[in-house]
Length: 292
Image 1 (cartoon, helix red, strand yellow):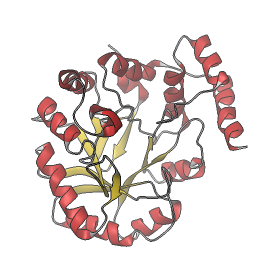
Image 2 (tube, rainbow, N blue to C red):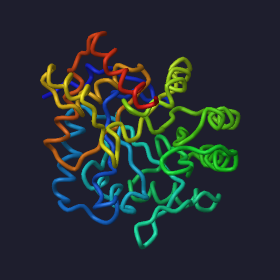
Image 3 (tube, one colour):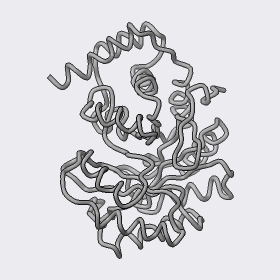
Image 4 (cartoon, rainbow, N blue to C red):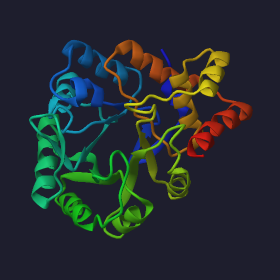
């Protein structure tokens, strides 16, 4: 079994987590809506992840909705003391599977309580405030009202730590004036490098950066350079893309998701992939080419 601790650890607030975690989004049905095709396999994936050393699980009550949190509770409750569960709020699902903003104080408060109930927790380790921007990217505008709600819920003891998702550097700075921010979750991968400067800035401040769509999401990463280098190393292109992220900065925490035990093992095996400076330089060129 792969020892994922070889990939190192980083802090999420007062919790130290292995840099290879698990994202629960794919445990729901198609389009992250409804129940999974195979609930037993979903439970097996979660148990295998924790048995393999994963101690950071990313979820949300709007996955399903409610589905992934209910499966996490069924598979893992009572939770190990070192398991950190991170959720995000700021949206709800329509009956047509649409993703709709839910960012009023009442919406956000209800979302936190829903996560706590469905996970069986008294307090969330981390709650990420998901800002609904343009497509999968952020848009400017004040986020003080939303962060202030989370800060109040933190004072009430319902949230231990606050994070942000889909935000700009300016919004992060605004939020830090209201509450301590322990992590940022934005779109970032080998080809989409708009957050390069932000990743480094957060690293200098000891703040975790958690890429969503680390493998491209709905448009999986494709590059002849990536495929060629993966072939030379005897790994898959997507394994190499994850390994690049681990090498990119020490504050990057990975949460690749899957509904398959075999695929989970494949993802966790990236902890053992070592990349030379020459390979890293070639892979860095993918992002530059994409941006050109």
